[in-house]
Length: 136
Image (cartoon, rainbow, N blue to C red; front, side, top):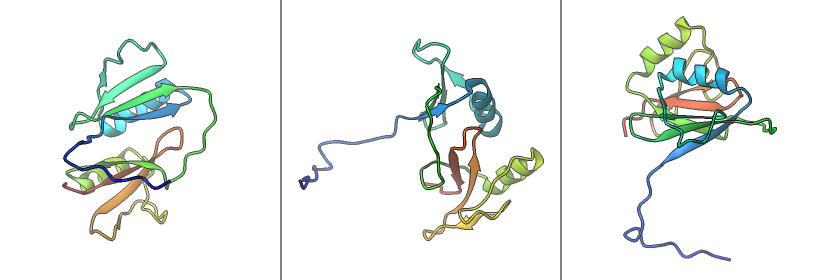
C-alpha cells in the first residue's frame, strides 16, 4: 500500500515528548537532573512510577519505571542540541561522566556530514543520548 503524502498546509507537527522506560526511577531521575540540569514538572497525576521533565523548548522527557526488558542501541537515540558543546564536554570530564563520538572514541566529538559536531552519552539504562552543537 502506497501512502499519498498530505499537503503540508493541512497539518503542522511539533515534538511534544520522549518517553523513556527505566528500571530505577530514582537513579534515572538523578542522572537527567545532574547531567542536563532538568527540573521535574507535574506528571498529570500518573503516580510515583512517572517523572516528567521539560526542556527549554517545552519538549518534555517522561521517565517511566518498568521491569519490562528492552535493549537500547546507539542507532536509536534522543538528540539534544546545546549552545556550548565544548563547555558541556568539560563538565562531563570533570564529573567523570563517560561520553564518546559516533565511532566510539572516548572524550571526543565527531562531525556529521552536515557539519554538526556531536557526542553520545549513555543514561543509567543504556539509552544513548546525542548532544550536538546544531543551532537550528
